[in-house]
Length: 548
Image 1 (cartoon, rainbow, N blue to C red):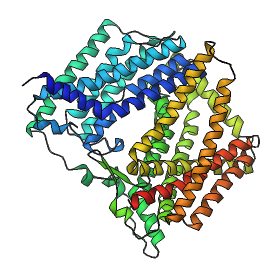
Image 2: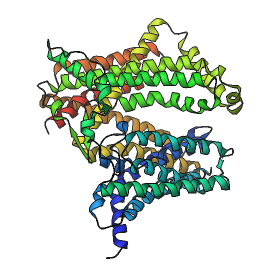
Image 3: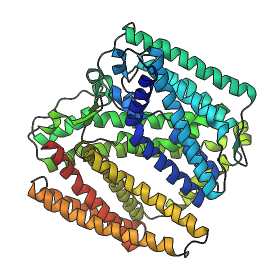
Image 4: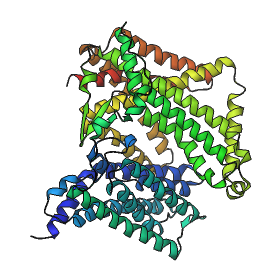
């Protein structure tokens, strides 16, 4: 048997699993990094941080083979367990998968950083961070693959991620460069070697059946949230009406867990900032937690309001939820409104925690003040600017802005629910639609660079952006008309739901004009049209998977 052929076959299989994600990450890294270099004063530093964030993560397309979602850590253990039956040594197929993960992500970073540095004339760190990225990926795959203990996975991920982050932060200097000492490079090599050995041993035990078996994830977890969290709030299901019963089900299954997690994040933010007044090192974690908390709650916990499930690479809808004797439009509206209400309350709690925590920044330890001469004044400036912008507003304007923010949150939750449903029904079409903004952004950036080199008139980019704006607006109008016609024809929409969507869109426009009188009328109409289209899209997409 030719030993080279199994390796080539496994490399080809890994490529088939990750090729779509390769394109997505490459597009996002190039567009976001180029945008930072074009628009921001500290563009190189921000572009470097974006690339490190994009390419330091494991391949999610491989991790999802074991079922589950990112919120519950996926099913513990080696994800490519179908390789156990092949007459190939464990060290071979584990080593191929590990090195493919580490080397491919590192190579994508090098390609992106080299292209951005060449295009903008601002070099980004290349070979100096190669060993860090490879060791990072080897350590992560070791933690995720060598054991079937989910507790060890979470603790182990933090145990190696935080030191790696601190090591990178301490070795970044201005002008932008990254330099590691000989001892630090030796430590990174040792981390990689130990990770490889532990992964070989752990997967070998799983292959022989010596590792402790775990309960299948679908029985242990309910919709991505632990059973103890779902059953924490015990109150009887109302039987007086179907609407109240549906609201009860949505609250118990996902709404109240989302609310409780949001409150926990709010408390964590305040505690991290409070501890920073005593311990300087905790401020390093306090600021990132405060920055990303709202995005995690909005785009992480607000995702998948329709309860789409994934198992072994298969995406499907819950038969229990979709076969209920309830109309599609009312069902979609209840699911979205309950989830959005819980997300909104959680974000209000996080916002209150951020405001209370910002008053503690001035009391941080003196060591923090000395080491973060640029960061802390910027945080205090943001707090003062927020107070100056929103403090003088009248009560009527503040209420109008609160209505705008609430409608925006509901629209984002609605869009995420519709996207998950469409991804289940039309996966390839949704993939193409998601790639179009990235391709458009990359084309605009390349055109901007060409114009800077003198290959075209300066106003060309502005005219193309305006034309794209009007083309996209016309496409949204046509899409909204089609969704209304198709929704009524398929009986997925009702007159009451359509009128409610129109009222919400009109309320958004009126509240925006009341809260921000200087707003552009065309921009307000465009945003109101987006909200109307998303509102109509949600029941239409749910109906497609409900009657597929």
